[in-house]
Image (tube, rainbow, N blue to C red):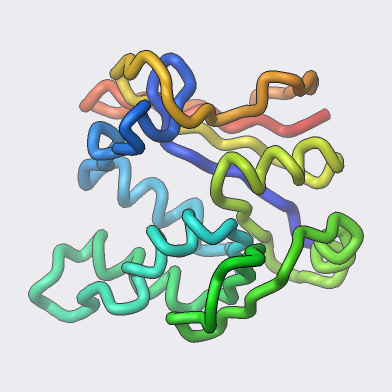
Length: 185
């Protein structure tokens, strides 16, 4: 059975994007990116909302040759090797391989996917993740906290949610980023 994981890079005050929609302040350096790559290797399926999918679709054509940094091309290959499901009523045809568009998020279908999968699933985007969190589907929450306060924007977690968590792992990076991994209990 696969676990459903919600992973994001956030500001210290809990946002994945600032009030202007920018997340440039969250760009991972090589050490963070390499760590993320190792976490993502066992993901078999990515679940996305339309906006997150549009951002992540970059990795479909990202360079994987010797001209790209190793950690960069490594992530591109990891992402390209996984299935993607996009939940959207407005998305057109997929622009990436191994991608399926679903008109709406179906908690029972995701629960069945988890039960049938021998690899973990990852959910991306705070709106979609909020639906999965409310449905009790998320097994782990993984957060990379960037040493920045952005003052508002798109929140990492919904404000109307109460969960008990158990710390699984933490890691400090030289650039000030802190990784926190929790099991939803």
